[in-house]
Image (cartoon, rainbow, N blue to C red; front, side, top):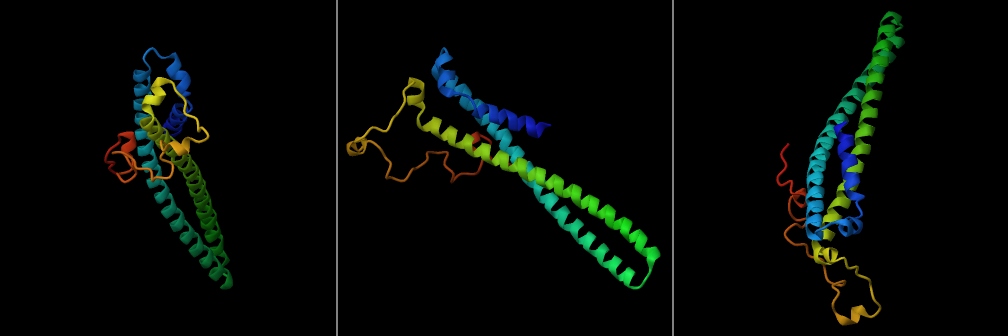
Length: 188
């Protein structure tokens, strides 16, 4: 299905070994830009799918609540009918209870599946966002093919900002969700 295909594409994009990809590229800057655009594109689509799944989740939660109420009412009616020894009516109520229980079980399975897929999207989207921010903040180092190591005594040089609060550029979390992926304003 589309949901799993998109999830697979996002996972595949996140598994790319950037160093290896850039080492094989003719133009490291263009290759990195193409990767970033690809990740933003799949991230934007994934963010939209996540919103759809959240809506489906809410719908299924409401449906489950309603089906539980119907089942409780039917069970209550059955107890009353049995107390009054109206066995003819009890038989039809038991059939209704079985059908209502089956419908509830199907809804709960769909809800569990939706919850699981939604969790996976949230996890992968968080990783994608962190990767995009890391690439944005270290673009020149990545293109140059350098690696940064923590060297003993480097703190004394005052060139690391470890103790200072991290401030994001124009794409911080203060903006609407989805901007890191270029999705802009999402509508429902």
